Image (tube, rainbow, N blue to C red):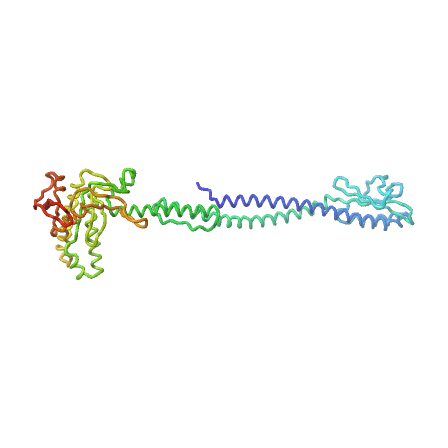
Length: 445
């Protein structure tokens, strides 16, 4: 089971986002709590000072009712737990609590204002004076923990809501961004699958200049290289049989393409009366007819292991014995020529039986065996694997001697056939471009 990269990136981004939000929230809440505590302390100071001013006269007049009312008013303030008034000796004169001790320590004997934090509480004391005489002290006890706790709980709820919203937005953004980042990888995976299935046109459009872009461009180069090899293989297949091609691919070290002297049997084949046909068929029909002929002929040549060197107008040059060296290349060449003539005869008879107008196909074939130079010949821009030498010229001259449907071979070919094939001797001939007489035989099939 594949766990998509976009989910991994989204989860990683979410974890980082949650960590960042949590850290920021803790810092914000801590600072908020401290700010609330400071604000509560200031408020307690103000209350204590107000109580000290307002309670001076009732304290001097021993007006307990008035003191009780003042204490009750201050105690009604939020989170104020206790208010009390002490005389100058520390005796509790009035308190908002009934269970107060009678004597308490004065906090303001030497200063006007004093604060004392005690277990989440804050005690604020303000000295009471009358005409510069110390007459007592007013104390306010504030539950700082309750003040900050309530506010912190509310703030925590708000932070959690905000964090949830931010996390949701962050997840969406992370998922989208990770999808964008992983899209090239998905495209690359699809392209790899297509390439594995044989689609050598598979490409990935590079969308970035990072490592993913480099990987996409490397894949495209690899695909282009494989496509080029496939095109070369396809092109090579047009000139050699599948058996020869497979040997070249499986054992390339045994194939010499740089140039060597090799004994081969050359087949030269020409379509008869083709020049006259071009004047009556017209360009399109001429090309179609020529392609039909070459399809038929080439298939038979390749079936017998021949290498098709080139198409020369209405002629074909082929040979056996290169690039794969064989001992029976002469027999194969003659067998291929016979197969070509028989296939042409079957084609013509089939067209006649169909009763439709058709162009009769007739070819003459010449075969000669001898040493030639074979290899890649050409320029750096274009090269062809071809054969050059006198046997090529002799095979061409032999096909010129052959009439429609005939196969002419030389004595060199005849000497390698044994008694397997019937031939008719036709004596010796002097051929153009050849400085010695050539024995001529016609193959009977």
